[in-house]
Length: 162
Length: 197
Image 1 (tube, each protein chain N blue to C red):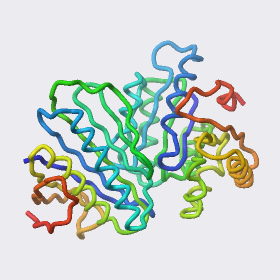
Image 2: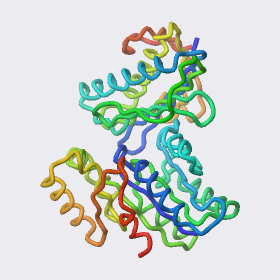
Image 3: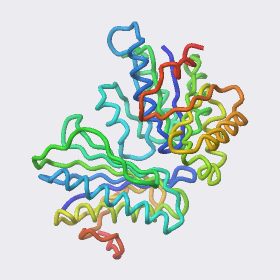
Image 4: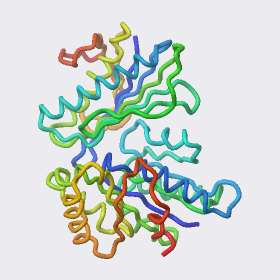
C-alpha cells in the first residue's frame, strides 16, 4: 500500500492540486515513463473537459539533490535533470497540476487517477490522505483516507471514504 | 542588498531565465560567500522548480505557504528579513508563482524594507494569444509594472507574431525594456543590463 498525500486548493481562478508519494525499490526509468504517460493523459483530459492547463509538472528524486523534472503546459511533456541510475531506488514523486476552468474536485480527481495509474504500474495500491482546505466543508488540517487500486486506468471508480 | 522580482505566467520560462540570471549575478559579484539567494514561491504544495535550481548549486529558500501576492505575503517578508539578517546576500531574487500579481509583492516589500524592487517579467510568446484571451487581467498584470520584459520562446512563433506581441506589451507597459529570448538557450549578458539602470 502506497500512501499518497493530496493537497488541493483554489488560488483565484486557478485550481491547484498536488500529490506526493514514495515508491520503494522502484526502477526509476519505469517511474519516469509512467509519469510522462500520465502527464500526457492529463493534457488530453483537460482538453476534453475544455479546461486550460496552466502547468502540470512533476519531480522524481531518489535521495540527495539528484532529481528529474517533468513538465507540460499543454504540449509535449518535457524532461530534464540528473541522469537516472540503473539500480532500483526509493522513488520520491511529487506532482502538481494547475488548471483553469472546471472545478477543484476535477483537478483533485485527476491527481488521484494519475497517482493510482503510476503506482498501479508497480502492482501497488494507493491510500490517499487529503489535506483539505477549501472543500469538504472543513478547515485546513482535516485528513481522511480512502483506498484505490491503481492498475493504470484513469480514476473512474467511486471512492469509499475511510 | 538588492531585490529582484521575477514574474510571469505558469510555464512561461521563469525558472529557465532565472538559471541564467543567477549565473550572471554570481559571476559579477564582488562578495565572498553567498551572493545570490533565491526565494522560490510555488503555488502547489509540491516544489519542483526549487529542485531544478538546487541541482545547479544555487541557494534556494522555498516558500510554499501560498502565493506571495496574497496569502503568503507575510511569510515572504519574514523570509527576506531572515535572509538579510543571516546570509546578507548581495541579491535576493524572488521567483513569484505563475499566478501572482508582481506589483502587489513589490509594493509590500518596498514598504517594509525601503529597498527599491526591480521586476523582470517573462511572457510566453507561444501561448500569449490563448492566455490573454482566457485571462487578460492576470496576464497584463504580470507585465504592466515590469522594468524589463523577456518575450520568451520566440523560436516557436513567426517573427510577425512576435512583433505583434511586442507591440501589445509596449501598449501595456511603455516604459519597459523588452528583449526577445529563448530562455532555455544561452542568452546574451546584455539582456541583464536593466539591472544597472
